[in-house]
Length: 329
Image: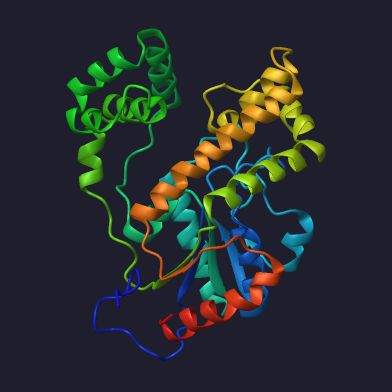
C-alpha cells in the first residue's frame, strides 16, 4: 500500500488520528462540495476551499460557491474571502489553508479540504516554491507584450529568460507564459529555478485523499445542467455587477468560466444561447483538463467513480470513515 501524503513508510497505524486532514477532490460538477458538507456534518468537520475561483466574493453563483444554506450547516473557510480586484496566488492560498487546517485541528474538528484546482492541491500535498510576489505593473506588462507580440514571439523571448519553462509550454498557453515572464522579469530569477527550491509539505500533517471521478458523459451532462441553472438563478446579473466595477480585464476573476461569454452577451456581441453554449463548451474543456491532471498527477487513497448524490452517500461514507480513522481504505 502506498503511504498517504505526509506519512513515511512504516508509520502506518490503525489508531484513529484526529489530526488527519481529509482532501476531497475532483473535476468540476462532480459533487465534491456536497460530499464535503455531508462528511463534515458526520465528522464534526470544517470545509476549507481549494478552488481558485471560489475564493472571490464577486461570483458566488458563477463559481458555484456553497450557498448560505450549506454554509450554515457546517463551518466553511476561504470561500469568498478575496475581492475581485485582488490577485489570489497559490502561495497565498497554501499559507491560508494551512492556517485554517491548524485552527480546525486545534479546536478538535476535522479539517476537510475540498476543491479541484490542481495547482492548489499539489502545493498543499507536495509543497511549493516560495516565489516572491510579482508587482502588478510587471504582470500587466507581460499581458501587454503577449498581446502585442503573439504567442510564438513571446515564447521565444521567454526562452532567453527561462529556457526550461519556455520549452515546457506551448505558444498558446498565454497565462503560464506570462506568469513565467513576469517572475523572471520581476524577481531576476527564472521560474524554473524558484520551482527547483520547492518547500516540503508540513511534517506534522497527514493527508488522506478522496477523488470523485464520475464518467466523462456524466460530467458533461452535469456541467450543462449546472450552467443553465446558474443563468436562471442570477449569473447574468452577477457578471453585470462585476463589469460595473471596471476592473482590470487581466485579473483572475475576469477570466472565470462564463465571465467572458456572458460579457459578450451583455455587450450585444452574441446571443444568450450562444453565451450559454460557449460557456458550457469552455467548462467541459476545463473539466477534461482536470480529469487528465487527476488521472496522471493526483494520488488518491480512495477513488469514487460516480457523481455524488444523497443516494450515494451511504455507499461512499463508510469508505471515507475507514480511510480517516484507520489510514486504510
